[in-house]
Length: 273
Image (cartoon, rainbow, N blue to C red; front, side, top):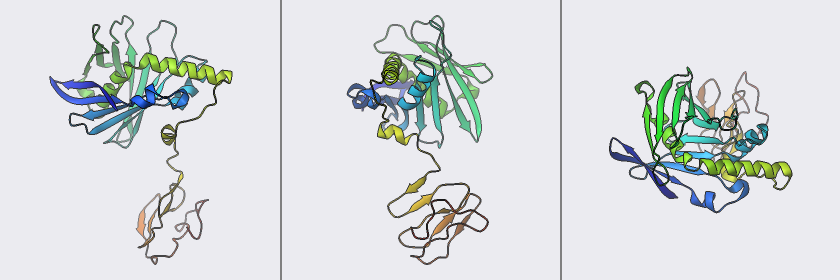
């Protein structure tokens, strides 16, 4: 992990930004990915930002070669993943746009970042879904690498939005390189010069949350239409359903029932796990 930037809030350092140098500098093809990490001042992890090569290639090929980068952002204190994507609706010399949304108690808040038309230092304006200006990222012109000053309207200030904007500023240092990497990959895939293959850590980000999961001593059926059974090597069997949670009174080594009353058994369920 290479630390390349710091976060300053009211004159005090509150965070650090780093990236996986081995993945970005030493890999090629679809194994080359940008992974940024945000830490607090004591180097405890706060959030991550991953360049989704597979998703970016899908959007780029769909845009007929225009590089469309897609990123996933994972904040440690939140269950929801934030997806930030570059817009494919872009004319030559027109400013680029990025969009994302945040979930707050099931309610989405949509945001759009627009690069300024007259832009010298990488300036972006943050818009809400009502097309209201709610934030600003002012890039400094004469800096080594890049420096941004961020401002957000008080009604929209929250830790997750600030983390997204901080990671976005860190990504801007690699923005041009990411576009060129995705553009060249799309050309090679389309011409048959490269066989697509998703890197293992990235493939985990595409996993189905309702997939059948295997553990060391358990098999979990994660589905909303059947019983979700968990058989431990010893002890009673906790059974979860989509509607309620009950505790099994089965013997320690007795297989759990395939389904709760009134529910269909899981298609992968077995009498013995």
